[in-house]
Amino acid sequence: MPEPIRIAAMASGGGTNLQAIIDACEAGKISGDVVVVISDRQDARVLERARKHNIEAIHVRVPRTGTPEWEDADRQITEIFTRRDIDLVVMAGYMRKIGPALISAFPDRIMNIHPGLLPAFPGVEVQWDAVEYGVKVAGPTIHFADEHFDHGPIIIQAAVPVLPGDSGQDLADRILKQEHRIYPQAIQWFAEGRLRVEGRIVKLLDPPEADDTQAIINPPPDGDF
Ligand code: GRF
Image (cartoon, rainbow, N blue to C red; front, top):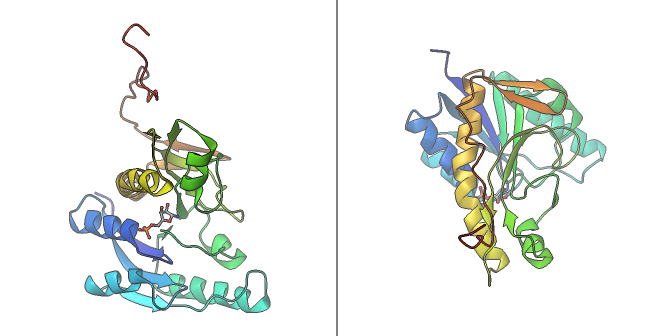
């Protein structure tokens, strides 16, 4: 059995993904521990969640992107993680751009979750955009982070149907349920050393056999099709 990994989380909001990750660690589904949580927002609920589980919770003020002060904050965050011997950084609803110091200190060791099927719908509030656009399937993406928003190599995606009458919030809730499944799974693959990044492609070693007849078709076709 490999050593449990040391995980750092970055988040700006409610932190239900962080909660799913902590729960998976505590249940032994992830062979690792969240050892520190950083938020750019002092009042973020995610900091409370961390403290409840005796996880170190730190607020870091992150000034406007691209300024020298933002670069200072980037270096500060990097130092917090390197001092704690972090193996993997997970962004879980972190709404700020990460900086060059962090990216170069943790190559292929920073994950992000996005509530859209990348490369479609990058950005924010994309579940609302997806409903408005009229797509029939949507879903979350877990990917390694690079210097661009919602861009790095994709690890896992899940597809869910967009149902007639869905509001953006209905779709966001349906997608969030799958986020809570696939993020812990991606982290456990990392912990097991099963992810290899080759350019844009992430290879999963020893993958379970995929059912290549399986598809989410929405609206569901009539019986004859
Ligand atoms: C999730 O939808 C995530 O994909 C997006 O922000 C939301 C965070 O939710 N980046 P939570 O804070 O984990 O509940």
